[in-house]
Image (cartoon, rainbow, N blue to C red; front, side):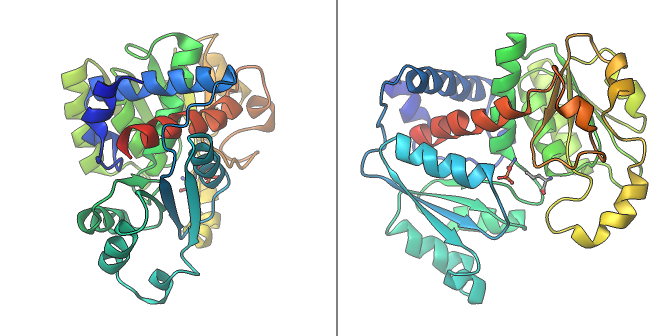
Length: 314
Ligand code: CP
Ligand code: NVA
């Protein structure tokens, strides 16, 4: 990894893809590819020897927890799992005090929590880099891994059509930001009442204009997938929305990626899902297990993409 790359990123937070330029995101993706190749070749790349990452979780996780912990280990460092239930944050200690305390002991913090503001506050008071491992608003690490996966399958990003079918949630928001920055044509199809946040859409629209992509939010899922190179979906009820699950089941009827929907996309389209998936709801078993599904490449690329982020910012 070039010293120049590390000097551009060192000390920065990774909270939203909107905070990075197209060149910077391309650079992180290049480093991720390099780190993946090194790992596959069995060459150790212990760039973070002696460094420690604190990982705060107030929501569940399989991929995020394992990929950050394994990633930090492979980089020669150490990761600490800090459950929101067990640390004093869960008993009312403030984010500001948590940020200042951890800043004296660890070299970076990854946080997965409900409120996006909490992550912004953590970054405000911490003197070390903060990495967003998912909030109700955004999931930037997932989309970085997804962009890496799209590049691997399609050989490029700019000019591709990505259709996202379903809830205008954290995944939709980060796909809007990441897609717009990298010059993709992103179309989101969601039912009324479940559209992405208009302020995110407006920022993504401006990013798209600057970077040669486009952003569109529509109602009709069949229209959205027409000729698409990438189909994406996510659960209808996210973490924290369990009580709305029944109502959402009805609202999202017709917003499913199934074999009929697949027929309208490009023949060589890939199908993506951040996982965990609810088969039979947002995606059929047939499609997620089918030849066009790349969901486990996405999961694996979480490891490589996040190692790139950590190697650059810490
Ligand atoms: N996609 C993702 O972030 O998975 P986890 O919730 O398992 O971390
Ligand atoms: N939208 C989902 C993503 C999980 C990785 C959630 O927030 O639960």
